[in-house]
Amino acid sequence: MLFLWLGIFIFSLAVLIKSADWFTAAAEKIGEAFRVSPFMIGITIVSVGTSLPELATSLIGLWQGDSTIAIANAVGSNIANILLVVGVAAIVGGALKVNRSLIDIDLPLLLGVTLLVTFMLWDGDMIWQEGLVAILFYIVYIFYSAKISEKRDYIPFVNRFHLERKIHHIKIPWSAMGILGLGAIGVYFGADWTVKATLKIAEILQVNSSAVVMSALAVGTSLPELIVSASAAFKGKYEIALGNVFGSNIFNLLIVVGVPALFAPLTVDENSLIIGLPVMVLATIIYTFSGISQKINKWEGMIYIFLYFIFVVKLFKLF
Image (tube, rainbow, N blue to C red; front, side, top):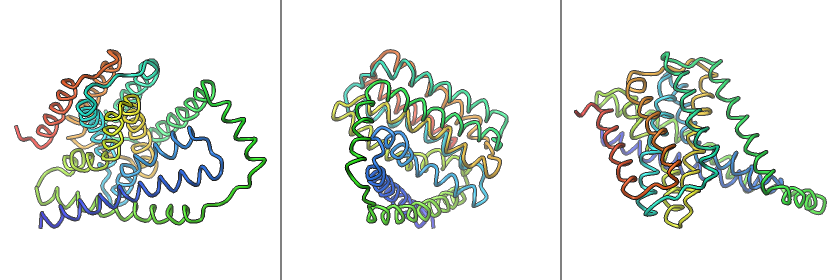
């Protein structure tokens, strides 16, 4: 029975991730057709797309009556993004050289958001008012990012955009809309069966479901980030490798946790409170200091992965 549900978990997770990829690609095409700027597509459609599996599984888990999945998933994904994804990227790339602009604003912002959400969750739950605050923070972040980008180098494109809009008529990409719909359906059913399989596996193994969520499910839903960051590191695009993790972690904390909290109070289970949150804060602090030093060496990446291994072992109480 365990192998059956493991098979269902792997298949449904693959459907979820692939459907999210279709959804994102179709949404990008639709955005381009309506002359939406590449930057806005990046910080909205693409950032949401890579974290869509986390959001979908969190909402489905809540609708299935488990109020702990959203927080365990977000916390586990953030830990995996930093310790596993950055660790692998550092090994693949040899060394990750951090862009200075990432240190000035982005990393301190990530640390601040992490501490804020941890403070919200420390009383054992997240209510709708706290969820609303988290979502508002994310909206402010989006508008702030857009404003900074426009000041730096986007104004020429905006002018060209308005000129092109006068010349060209908008052609609605109906094929992309069809793929968008299929992607959305795939995301729903993929998330639904992924959550069901996760709970069944936890039941069969007689472990807390949050342990499976913070490990297997978190790693599974972080695969898009892992692939993007490892590929970017291999090509020497280190800022993309690290920035991808930053954007995903911000989204996980403010949206993956904030949106489900609007529908029902979210519960912080014992594993998430005692192990998950402290490790997430510690990993974020390490990530921030790595940014200050402007370089993450290959040996540091190995330490990141070793720390992730210790986290998983501790999570399942193997020592």
